Length: 347
Image (tube, rainbow, N blue to C red; front, side, top):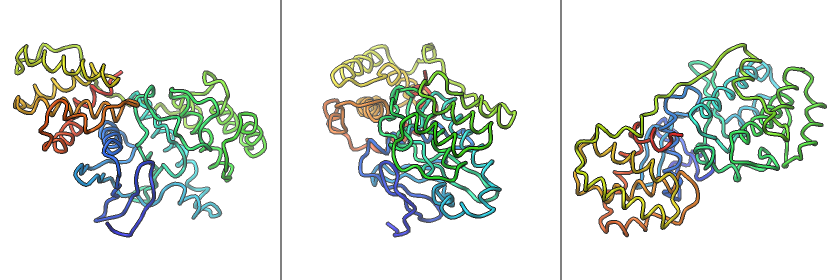
């Protein structure tokens, strides 16, 4: 691997190689979570583009950006370039997280180093490091960097709102907060450092101890820019199985019973979504029945990686089938399929 290190993410180091950003992981479950989230969010305009995954070598390829936002701040904070681009940075941060929220997910690790700056063809900031991203109930909000994590963290998108508040406070006030602050301390910093009344109102809202009093990102976008930013994603009707004609009833029954048994044994979440996603994938791709067992194992592994803590690991797939030689290619195929991802992430 090249020595041209770009940074370190939640679960791995990022390198520059062949005009791409390459993230190297130590754990297959971690690359599954980040690759799944990246592909699910591929329609977003303000989220980093994930290109491909190599599960044999635990490498994730992403669009190469010019800086992390933290590095950009360190370089330009005392220059006219900073003031010129600050409004665009704030807007892009809001748009990026709003896109993630609109698709039913939380980012769960919002901080300046996890946004990326693209200089050309136009200046743009995108949300990066998707390692903690999941449906808000399962996002790893408890592992958000302490400075940007509220004292009373919750499994809701409101925890992201607090993190955005601290991030924007640092940007607007040109300060760096070095420890997790109490709610009243944050209020004091805002009142002391922020002169613009609109920004002050927004920041006080985002960091309010009561999550119900925090402005939604769409409301903030409306206040600052008088714009409406929405992202519509078509979710398949997961209850409609009338088109399932390739699978025999006994095959569907076997797949369903296996899912039910292992999700119960290992406390795997969203097993029904995984079952429906898999039979839809099998149907659409006319998958040979010899691969059904390894595909069940791969889907259970994906659910375990993406949706909360579970005791199910890669090794447990051998309880379903001893033949796991095609596991990595199947993981890649499943996680590159938009229908499959839309179903497992669906509300």
